[in-house]
Image 1 (spheres, rainbow, N blue to C red):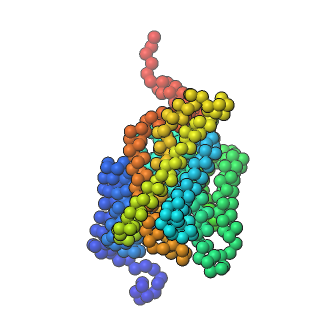
Image 2 (spheres, rainbow, N blue to C red):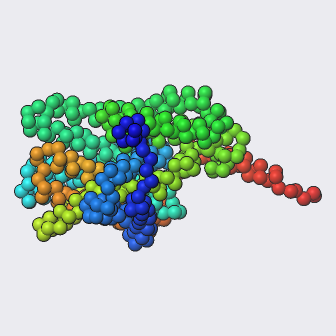
Image 3 (cartoon, helix red, strand yellow):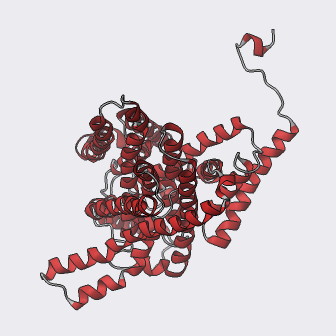
Length: 500
């Protein structure tokens, strides 16, 4: 009996040569486009989005729909891994110190685009209030995947996730995502509200806020008072025996648990991925004798009683697959979702360009938080502004510009929200949808390109800035110095000594 008829198993067929060549060319052009766009624009993701446009439904429809659906799912796994890696590498000490600033930046980045959308679309172009709210919600988001990729690939010499401004940027983007999730929940219910059976609006709005807040609050508390002490007392020494094996098993379990909890609780799975990374990075002990306090990956692999860290494990087993498979598929899937052919009408072009400029400005104003924070800090120290404080605020324009430009990209979150508004509510017209897509696409291009140019010219200055650049790790520096000292002493013992 044929397998198709019995349904007991999938019949194995040799793929046709057209399918094989199509897939080979798709992945080849993803790699070439990433290289070219990085050379030209300092943002490799733009080339991958263009390849997605060409191979997907918007232009060529070369890939069959089943493949596009599969690549979209794999690409979203890539997005989750990007955010998870960001949680592993972020400086938790800087995250705590700058949380209030991050909240202010996030609120400014959410409210300003919505306000500007009402000013232009509602007052200027005459679109409906709810229609404008949906578009403003799509444009208030920040692409987490793009944010992490931009700051991680911007410079080979500097890890901007270790800078103060990089930490503020990442946490503000995370909070933007949480706000976007709350507003998406409202948009989901707009059809039901219009039909008179929308349910409890208070719970619709409150659930994602409550779930996100509890996850964000309980995770560090559990890590500090419960999970961290238990891990250090009962498990840490055993991890040094099995090294990568135990690390990867724990990473998969923790990530899967956080994704499930975040999804079922009503929070964003991206927030769950980020918190999973921060939890893992906070578990190991920081003293010099700790198994995870190592000089580098090789030291953790070879030294007795030592283990590679979780980020070392990610780099060894996951990083290559993420960089060369999942990450390109994620940005290509953004290209799949762009209604390219509908963008090219006279009215859509000029309105889309005007709205794009306004939305760029709506995120650039977030950078004003940096000099404002400098000025407020100076006033608190001296009870009145001094010339020194004002000059410090004026000299912070480079970190401020980085914060503003890196928040510009909307990417996958914006496209998701605006397509929900089009497909699941009766309020968003096709014309308004196209104008919103223009702004989302161009902002996703303008943001990374601007960041690439800025960091090429000013990257070292930003990294070396005393206030906003790379900050000393106060909590682990002594341990790291002790390990380094012992390693150097061991090396000197191994060298031949001349008799005196």
